[in-house]
Length: 239
Ligand SMILES: [Fe+2]
Image 1 (cartoon, protein in one colour):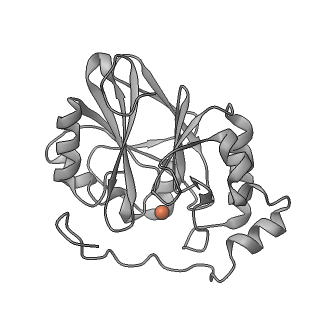
Image 2 (spheres, protein in one colour):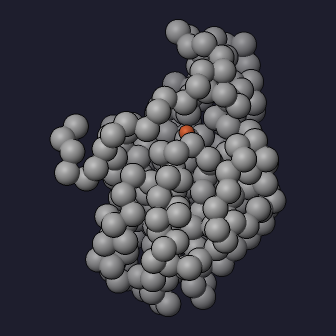
């Protein structure tokens, strides 16, 4: 994989944006100069400028889940690019998310970006009931399921630490060790990692039993916590 659309073939590129260090991820096909944008949030103009800088046309929007810090610029983007918006049906039903061009997908669905890049929907619940990771050859975009040396909170409404435990186990056993992970937030020591490195370093993957995992994940947290309101933020804000 390449960071940026500088070579032929597929690429994955991260744009860090917003006060919570979200990653907006571009999955692209250099040959056809097209891309999917994963989790457009915080500022549509910055996202559009980044696509222009990469010299790619946005042909799809992929949502890992429905939290506003991942989807709040979907409608704003649609005013410039008239493209399908994908979210797993489980997440749409949980959240009531609606937007123009919404496609409700099933686990295992595959969508093509450009001419060559196939992206598979993996259902990875735990942070929310319909959380999705997007898999392509050699890479996975994990949203708020797995971070570099971390994992998504399970105390927000719809979260379930027991489910997360199973999801993380499935994820690391389903993927080759050299798979590059692109998380939904820049919370780690590096912007990306690999499955092998996470098996070695991620404390949430060191918990051997579901009870141990739940205790660790929920320490100091209360179940069914509402998501905080959107902070007032623009690209010019200092934070
Ligand atoms: Fe989230």
